[in-house]
Length: 135
Image 1 (cartoon, rainbow, N blue to C red):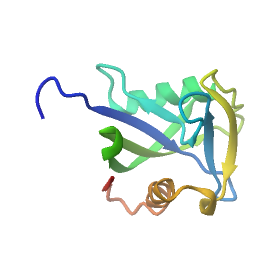
Image 2: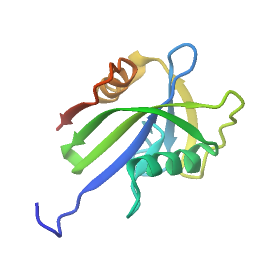
Image 3: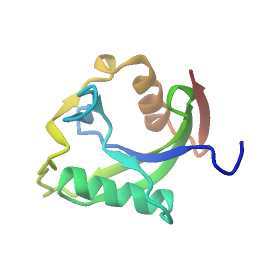
Image 4: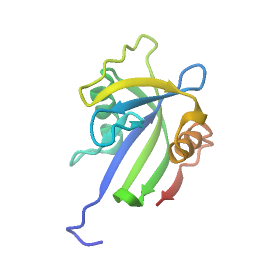
């Protein structure tokens, strides 16, 4: 990798409710896909700072990061995604940014195969941060 190559990094939150459903947001851009809250790091940000900033921007409320569960390389977009287990305060009120059109709780069997792997890795965290690669 040379100095001028383009490379991305992002931080994302796995937030679950009492029924073990996962919070996903529907993007209002690109393919309008459903995804975990979070996004790309700004220059000079740590993965933790990006996680907290992105979640506040997208959800309109703060999240608490519990642990980093995995780091995933996505070859299709030349990016590493850092996945954190997070939770919302009991009185949190989600207010989406204009980047997203909806939010919803999803059962694990409703997730895409790649998303399900990342979420299950997070929910089954045993103290070891996992690393995987997706084509």
